[in-house]
Structure formats: structure tokens, C-alpha cells
Image: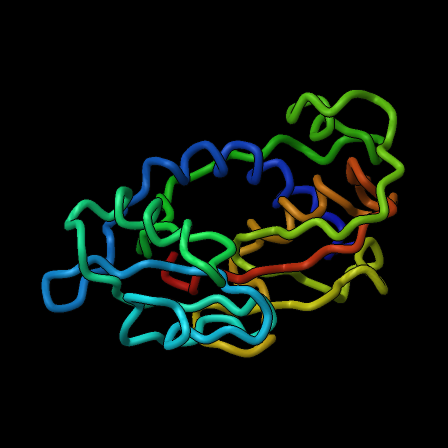
Amino acid sequence: MRWRATLLAAGAAAVALTSQAAAGERAVVSQGGEPRLLVALTPGVAPSRVPGLRDGRLVSRALNAWTATAGGSADPAALARSVARRRGVVAAQPDTLIRRAQAGITCSGAPGTPDGYLIGAVRAGGAPLDATRPVAVVDSGIDGSLDEFAGKVVKPVNVVSGGADVTDGDGHGTGVAGVAAARAGGMRGVAQGSPVMPVKMFGADG
């Protein structure tokens, strides 16, 4: 019950913190005066096979995602659009370091039913969505030991330190995953039939 209470509290905070995260610090990563890009490549393709990409560093083997420089425009957004059109590139965007705003949140008390106030807070309607496709939650990780996520966590990715350890030291990612796809228990998610793919992008310092 302690973990379920934690999940409920984290879920309440998730709704508020998600909007506040946009107020965090953002800065495009640069190298030698050139902006670095985050690029997703087609399976089996490395940056060395994409014209113009240099200094590629693997971020996620599962996603075949890399950071790299590309030269050309000093405008990161324009450069990303140009690179995204090259053969072998699925998507490209400026590699931006984001530090989540650390704002204090006062959570509401635990609701009396699994629907609670979270489904309404994200305007998802009253009926659960019978979805089966995985839902990627890009956040602080997940507590996969909760009954609500038993057998539902697939292909975890840690882009902070590499590997597949997505232990949630913050609680925010667990709350967001709960709103998205928790099996009904202490709370229920919108898409209870969907697996969850946690992508940990925030470290303990936010």
C-alpha cells in the first residue's frame, strides 16, 4: 500500500510538473562552436555513413540514436531540418540539455477510486483506452516493481548513463507512466493494455 500511495501522489504531481518542466533551463549542446544534433538513424546505419555527420556518439543502441556534429548552418533548428532529409536519417533535432524545474508541489489526497482525478486532469475521458502498442514515457524512469506495471515494462533505455537501468529516483516518471498505462490498482491508466517503454532522461539532480 505504501507504493500505491506513492504512485498516486506521484501521479498527482506529474500533471502539474509536466507543465512546469517547460520552465526549466535549456541549452543546445555545442562542440567546437558547432551545435550538436540528436539523430535517429535507420537500423544498421552509423553516422559515418551519413554525409556530413561527424564525431558520432551512440546514445541508445535500442533506438539507434546518436549525437553528432554536422557543420553547415550555425542555426541548430535549420541544421537539424537539413540533416533530417539525408539518406539513412529517420529524424534529427538539436541536442538540447534540459534541466527540469525543481518546483515544490502540494499533492491532493489519494482519491477513493482508481479513476481518481488524474484521468480527468489529462482530459482523457472516463473510459479506458483498449490500446496494445507500447507507450514511451520519456522522464525520470519507472518503478517497475509496482503491481500496476507487472509484465508491462519493455525495452527500457537510460540516456543519462547508458544501459537499461531506469530506476526512478524522483517518482515523476512513475506517475506519468501510471496516468498513461497503469493496470487498474491503486490507480488506473488511460491505456491499460499498453506496455510501457521507460526512457530515463533525467538524473537525480533533475
